[in-house]
Image 1 (cartoon, one colour):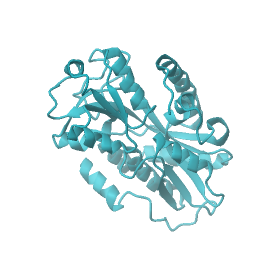
Image 2 (cartoon, helix red, strand yellow):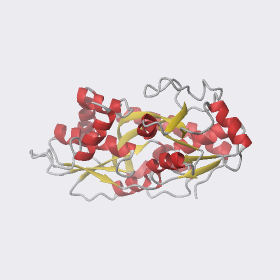
Image 3 (cartoon, helix red, strand yellow):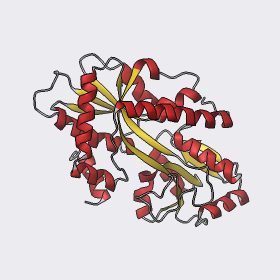
Length: 323
């Protein structure tokens, strides 16, 4: 199965959980899986695969609901307001729980009081991409180009104050650039703007650029992991390219409203661990650039503590505050 085939199956409904599974549910409630990004985005694609598996494993109707906007904030706001006659989960970047509370004066949710972690789903690196016809062939050449063309130096990101924004900012600072950082509500728009020449480069999750790279319209200059990304093993990391402080990964996890029964959390986590063993799910997501990595709520809580501390240092150094 090729990546395009996997995407076509998702679009056609072959892997989408919109059709309820006609089996007795464990508590009579449907399951809503809320994702804070637009249809066709990276998190949305993963949510559809996750939703299908949860529906089949838990024997209950499961529906993916898109609440795109503000880097996933709208999904978490909708999650806490879920009606009593449904069970609700949200697939969210961990940054919404660890970074955003430090950059936004107010949020439409309270991480400590209104949300509880369920389990991790996957982690993903970021990539810096330019148009295929851009004169820079390497990251160092891109830095030189930006310094020679400061009025054209721009880097798109999927939201002001998002993890990719801060990784791009770290690169900008270490390289001695003053690039314009441009936020986009819809991540796929970043790739199109880079191809069209509106942006000099884009920083977003690795799979976002895959189709345009295969089509010869984009080129990745570096990825943000501590090791080379398996999706682009030929591409150096920022560290390898000479920028040792530019490292970043984004974990996505499932969260539930506070008060969700512990049995429900345990059942969902068990279902996700089963999904981790599914060859079909692993193969589909591998073609999209993901590796399933399921950890329980305790692990997510500890990761949240670590990332909160990590982001605090960066936010303090930059002085960034979201509008």
